[in-house]
Length: 247
Image (spheres, rainbow, N blue to C red):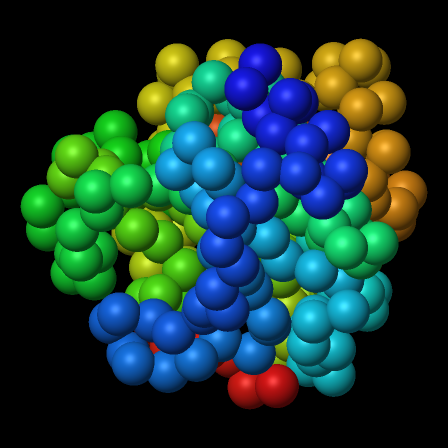
């Protein structure tokens, strides 16, 4: 795949023509708390690099510190296993001896529809289930983009929490997509896809990026949805909020 060759080139400090720090939401005008860089190669291919050293440590979320870059890759693996196609290709790389996640840059995007009115039911179900599965705690209005009038899930670092507790104010899913499908019956086709996440090969791949507690909690969410047939989880509240959660 293209991204594999790119990783080797970046590791060797070759073919990089430009590095630009980015991270301001076009919707809110607010700079994100995590540092991010747009890396452009000599062939004009671009990627977003999120280094571990630039990660914000949130005292509010149940996400282990300095692991956000790994969670970006874990989210991409979940997306692939589901066959949703809503997360750009993502890998872990070193750039200038600093480790981080590298994700394909999505070109020709348009401003996201924060009302969700222009999206199809399929778009909303895919994004909503995805955020429930990964325990997304940061799907504010700057953390998805539109490509060809469809939502694309970026900024998945604040996901895969390692703790959840009923009635705990910090046990939240912050996602308007998840809020839209919350407690609704899951269409059969998506239930079948959820079962793919129980594959031992997939679970093994995921364990390379996130800890066992976080994987176990993800499996609890998946099992709950499979067993109840509803888009919900007993240990969480789901909030429609578009802005960022408290830090």
